[in-house]
Image (cartoon, rainbow, N blue to C red):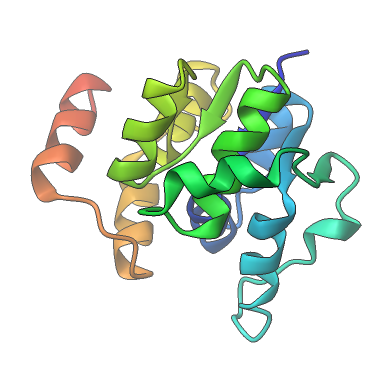
Length: 160
């Protein structure tokens, strides 16, 4: 079973789509640092909110090296702790959407994917059949995806 760590934004995006189950179906379980859990908890009033502590396949882990977060002053605490946790767990994959967080993760020799990568893998594994409606729904629910990227993805998947 691969060790997979997620940041906040991909979880929120999948919650907005009501497709958090894709993470379980693709990876069996995922790990999140406490900072990511706290960021999700800060959005309790949102209609898509779920208490991640009650989902058995999501493991909330406290990072061991609190000092390591200081190396990532240009990231928010969720991203920084996700990268630290991924290195501490020798994770096979980290799920991050933000460009700067991805940059830092790659420089820490972590394999990186994001929300769109998860959706692409879900389509490849036939867990979903179309990306276009999901990408459109994300856009409607205030998840920014450039039109150029959306078009590239839909061409790649044969949906255009």
